[in-house]
Image (cartoon, rainbow, N blue to C red):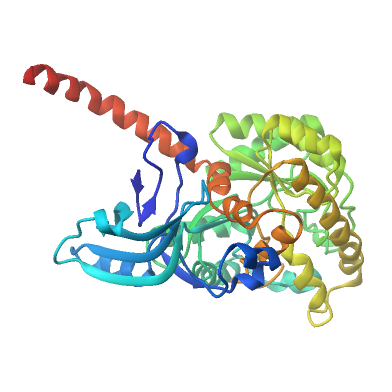
Length: 451
């Protein structure tokens, strides 16, 4: 099936929900596969230009500004579901939508179409980053206190553009102050600023003094994070409040974190009962739940509570792996940030109370996540961009491959898997079924008339 903004949303079998991709907003990106690990060189030719989202930026711009069709000829198209590399393919775009993808020899292109020839390019779907913070930049500790909500929103506009230019056409933004991510999403959707399609959480839910609270200021300031809520009734209220103000999903901080003062990444924070209440209300109201969780107990409880994804998963153990596999919980590891953070810690004046935690967590995370990969947990791609500069998102692929995923599995994590986690597959199928119900009676009537 075909979708909006040059999005290929499925294969030939419309009944196959796994065939459905939701790939949006075209952009081009170029990177050398040698940057993604030695094993990628063995599977793909190095120095390949990757054209993301099945459509070059120039082609999409023409399609949006003209009634003329756009025809893109590509040397190869990667079927990210099967891993098949299809040669000599042609895409036809009309009114900003891909209307056909197929072998060039079998495709009839409109005579007056604008043509984009990419004979040496390999096209694949637009990439999805399921863990970003577009309204933040790499600022650590007390450096973050001087930024207003309006300033963070403008930072988000810059980072949205950088992320799109890096080839990521959809992001899940998991945590922003003052609903600045809601404002950014709405501005992108209105065409006011360029950026990827966004699903946003608004403020992350946190216990008092937890990872997502404001723990930097002393008592007399009475500083509290926007998402702080304690107890079942309070977390239910906070979920409903976030949804009221525009959140597409709910982010909950289930354990302590690295880049926060005074907490332990291995310690669980919300109780199992509180997380069950969060998930129950969120799911009942049509929102998925992402759980920041480093520690093993918090990972286990979050999956038992029914969250849709575990973010980071640094101290994941066999019990957590088994629970996640049983429940179909996705792991969204954020791995490259460790390399960039440690390499730039001195230049960024990272406080000792953060640096000490990072030195302990990062190597443990690499070991435990490699074990989780080998154990077969479901994986979706996420970066935690904002810990490092936005636009470097694709560096995550190299670390995923280094820790055991195949290159295709890493690409699938950023395409079909991430689309499934974000709920795009289900949304498309619901729309498709509704369309069928609306059209089928007319088809039956027409057939009866013809007979």
